[in-house]
Image (tube, rainbow, N blue to C red):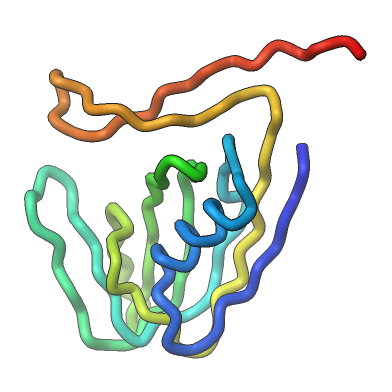
Length: 136
């Protein structure tokens, strides 16, 4: 496993930044090891909803989980508001960094993560391709 760490700065879009990072680093099979920080705007798609909800308030990022590759990302986020109330769901574009986001990403060369439309779910779902080791 290879480990990368990035820090996002104020006003960056969390999802777009991670998507761009996966493309720039040519990540073929990545996963979030740790993700914390703060947002000044949050955008989340809740379970079984077609549209996302945007909140124009400050949140702490409690957790960020999921997979990423140069072919697509699928991330979920847990947030706490100023009273400690937590919400979470599917990360969408529009989560804007307030002060920082500190993210640690693991990658492996054992797999390749792709995305393809799944007729059963109606979404782009994870395709996992195992890449056997090649002896040199």
